[in-house]
Image (cartoon, rainbow, N blue to C red; front, side, top):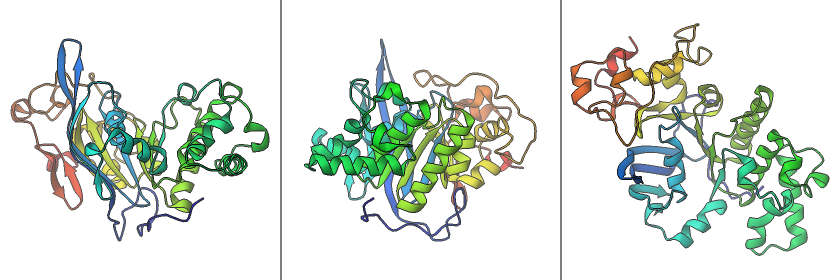
Length: 343
């Protein structure tokens, strides 16, 4: 791997609270995304803000449709045709929302790597693994023998057995876990400073999930790669993330250090998610299913979008949209009654 890595923040380990926080490598500020949905137009991402510090992992969590993947893909310009964005995505010294298409292509892979959710659909079925992992290096002008050597090192680094053989196979000849490792190798090929991992363990068995999570943690610890981890699975986030932003209906409901947010939520939605996965929260030993269905971002309820599902909802929640505000040191919540949630 390259030695051009940013300094890593001092910290006690995954899920902990840093004693000397690093400056943000990536800072998303008041991001809005407007999409046309048939005859309707809707703001599907609404004033979303979060950051990723050098050498740390930020988790974006929430149910399907909460806007976490769209927020992440906005960073590298991978949005549906016709999407309109506003706000600011500060990547080191530049605003990526103001970047040209050519510049975004340079950023993708070389500066920010992406691990897509479904490796089978993301990988080209007619090209070998070696060709796909080495593509970014060939485009950068590296000689073919050097590219092959580099790819072999990457395949070995992500734990693919017998890389000399696997480099020449096609995606359908590999298991789901091996394909996901190939996606990780592709994300690392350009030696990025940040990796966006979109549901990297979805559809994998529990044992393979654990191996992939260990690999991601190792990459963060050993290579200094910062990560933005998108997941609906709180177990995954609790295992890897240092900081989290909890999303609901295209907005951030809560934000803060991962361990604190998951163990002592300050928003009813976060508490409901954590109580639905007892292994994550110490609040309950019995799973409590989250009632109702997620809000439609094209047709959000008035006031707090979560109020139709919230056991704490009051009249103010139905009429007044809560702002995301700091309610404790480093803890942000978009709940009118955040002080009552953890009591």
